[in-house]
Image (cartoon, rainbow, N blue to C red; front, top):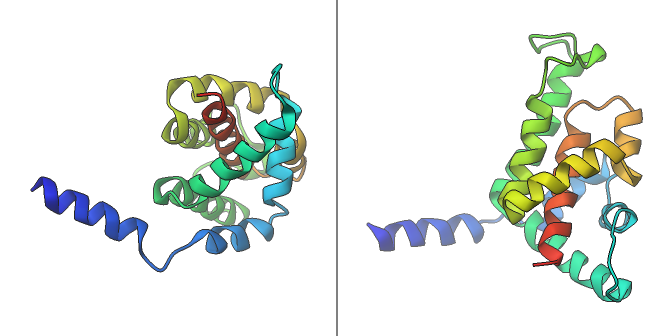
Length: 162
């Protein structure tokens, strides 16, 4: 059974899906590798060489866009945006009510998948400060996508310092 699970995991990672698929989707929302890197670096507090951090961040971003769990959560956030715009969610999407926290849950799940508990704490920092592309998505009224990208960036930045 264990060999079967390993084989299934390899099949998932070696499917026809690749990073360019999710990048094409994200670019429709103005999200690029560069602006995710800029966002991550905006809240970076480190005495290390920032160019080295940025290079490592880019590698981690590309690796994690290829993670099917991460990309599926990001796609899920996008689909929820689409359904919210159509009025197909059980709350007023345009008001982004305080009692709806599933958007933060998506962000925390993405952060956790990438780098564990420390990334969840880092997500709260990116969610509160809303630097760069995260703030731009929030200002455009996206309820789910800003948190998904905040979680992604927080997870990747946390991974940089492991």
